[in-house]
Length: 78
Image (cartoon, rainbow, N blue to C red; front, side, top):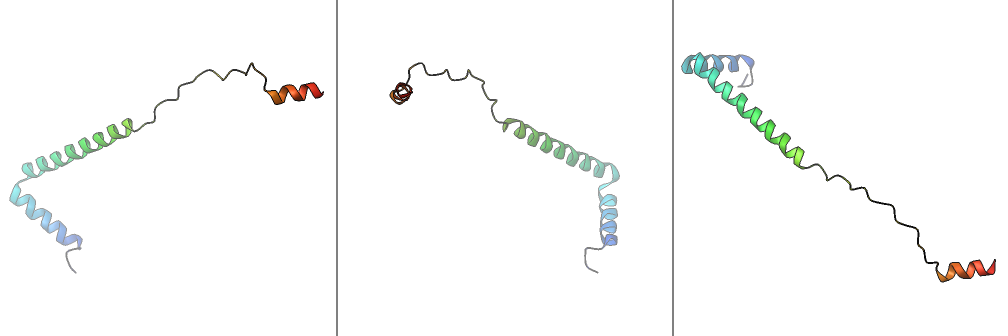
């Protein structure tokens, strides 16, 4: 059987509730839930910081105004 049985966990939970009292147990569970929410909020804030920077749009490179020697030689042959 071992400790993996559902009945063992139910009995253990009942004993814990009886020893700690219902109100105290629910307060502990509320604190755990708040901790989980804070953890998720912190993780989502980290994800927001990891976004890549936006691309800056610039002007297209202008066409060269000076012709190269090879281009001028080719044009002379034509």
